[in-house]
Length: 406
Image 1 (cartoon, rainbow, N blue to C red):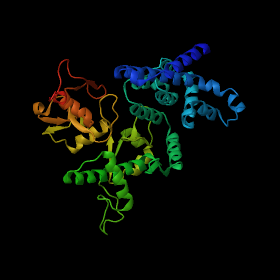
Image 2: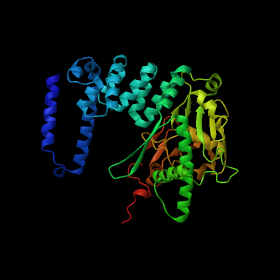
Image 3: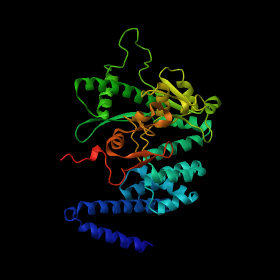
Image 4: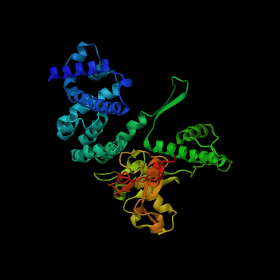
């Protein structure tokens, strides 16, 4: 086995020694990138499979390292966090044969297998679902579901301990990058992050409206950067300015919370139940109870009004239906797309001109790029919630987005 790996390494090294992108077609280059991506996954799989066993050896001690992870990080020339995750995942694979088989086949990246193994270790019954999700959805979606599984498998004490651990390690750090730009890195509890994200988005929306009226346009990230400066320097459009308003909690932004009613009454979740801040992830039910009295919190309780049957005449989406849509589709519904900002409502089932009504069942949230592909490119969004499918235009057909304008 070892000699075969050594031969493969020599062959790849010999290929790269003579590699010249200028001597191949662009299509051939694209094919080579795909081949090397598969090779990369297989190499990472091999390292992960053997990492746990290697950590049991004394090699790391003999070479003067403080831990097996330190030794592995030196071998890969990668971050310590990735080395720790590889060793932990390697040891979890012993009890997760299906995940190990998927890893050996090269169908999972190291990041994907880390997420699957971490959650399946808490709830083995979720392994098959997570593997299926890894095969068809983005890493962001897999991470979100992984966090849900781990939260649903936790006791009330586990929930509280996880929240305390995050809070104890919260930070904001600043640094300067290679171009001299001022940069921020932060770690916050989910509820604090939701407040911050909500305030940033509200201020960014206000800045966007001002810019739109003046005829200028920048990226959503740029407006959020300006919003952060405005909020922290007291110049925000959305902050209270009068003496009477100072000290009051603003209600210009919303924290969306999804929670099962039974969990809310009980005080913690059990398997199959959800308590999360939409777009950020699971939080303890106790945290939600603390947030409920605040005016800016919007909570979607699962056994409340059956929003699936809310509809009305007209194109405008009612506030009730829009809230339900935001909860159901926190990211673009197109499989593999994880865009969460600037989503647009799309009448996927039947064009509004034909139906004349607007209901949750008829709507889906998609990013602007996929909305343009549907509207102008002839692409089709099919399937419905939980089984979305995105199809290219029928053979020979194309929308105005791809028409030859000469």
